Amino acid sequence: MNPWVDAAFYAVLGFLFGVLAERTTYCIVVATHQVMGVKYSKVYEMILVGVAVSSLLTGLLVASGLVPAVDAYFKVPGAGWYTLLGSFVFGFGIMLGQGCMVGMLWKAGQGYLVNWLEIAGMIVGTVIFAFPVFDGLNLNWWWHHDTSLSIMNGAPRNYVPNLLDGLLSLRAAAALTGVIFFAGIMAAALWLRHNRLAWTGGERGKIWSSPYLLGTVFGLFMVASFVFLAGRGFNYLGVTTPVGLLGEYLTAPFGGVLGSASMPSNWFQTVGIASVFTFFILMILSGAMVSAIWRGTFSIRLPARNTNAAAEMAIAFLGGVILAIGARMAQGCSVGGFWSGLAALSLFGLVFTLGFIPGTIAGYYAYVAMSSAAASRVKTIRQLSSIELKVGSVDVSGLVAAVLWSVVLGAVGLELRAFNSALRVHMSPAAVSQWSTVMEVAAVAVLLLAVVGWLRRGSAGAPR
Image (cartoon, rainbow, N blue to C red; front, side, top):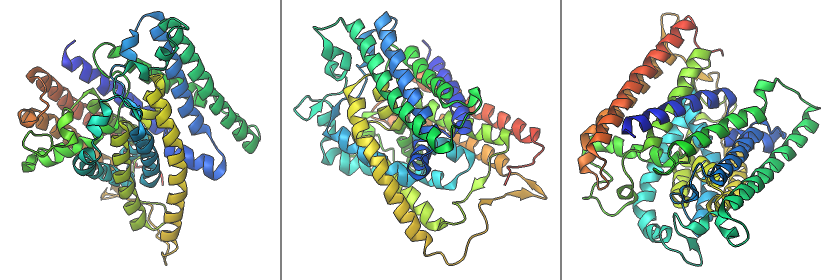
């Protein structure tokens, strides 16, 4: 298959994912705050349903023979002490950062400044991980060796159905494991639903806003990726690696190509500068931004009025640094570890979940304590919750943001062409050329869609 087809597929998949995420507020951080604060679990239920449906369908696809069993695990990260520790650190970090990996992207697209700072922190955190942490903990060795404390990446024994060898055929084991994962995750979702309905007095909503319908749709995004890249690479969804690699695009114009062979040994030298998920993550943000502009929900958003704005932004940046280190250590995030790991029916996903959920709970309490302490130091209540960029009486914030973001997309495409040869992990010239072209076309398409959406709303701006 031509490289441009893969790029276009993930660009469209990411754009649609971003639109849906922005409209449904898909974010584990939002979900955790709701559950811990007011026992409202609709968003968490939606997320869990997406994971459950993905687990069931990937198991059934292997059971039916449509996707070979080896394809379900040969690109999946292994599991070890680093997974447990890293997932806890990651979960803690996203709560400080105020956005999980999906939430960070769509909230940045909707105009939240704290999440742009979270992204910046994540880029810095990836660089910190890549040099002292990666080599200091000898992680590349741990990831590729079986020991009493680790299962190496791609190992067959990481795939739970393989553990049933001798009791069932592999296809039957895949089906059974998929059903068990589905039932366990759905049980958690239904328990949350029971508590939510008891708290809200039996809340009922429209069928199209049901977390069970929306969660199923999110699950189909994962399954689409699983089928599309079957036999050709990591076919689950991933987010943190391409976000972390944005640091290379930022430093390359200044001669500091982090993944070049001339650099000291570091994590950037182990992965290519781009993958299909580069298109996925950039277009999640793009889809969210275009959706927000079309709906009139885009604005340059400051932290809430009753908070210490400077402290909130500093906490978000710190959270980005922490979550990046945790995600890279664990080799996954809320998408690549929790969701993809469980959809892969892997021990990796189970171990990641064991660290991740407690990490989010600890991070919730840490964030509340830090935010409350900082807010108590504010002597006057800030009146502004957003910043408007006006030309005359017309708010052009969304239009300006779309133009700037389109320039970023185009620049990524141009840079990809420029410094591939300097990297230790090279891409083929054909892939570089085609992927760059797709990114440049995407930049123009995003800008046109944003302009049409802005004009369609009569330049009214976002509701306040």
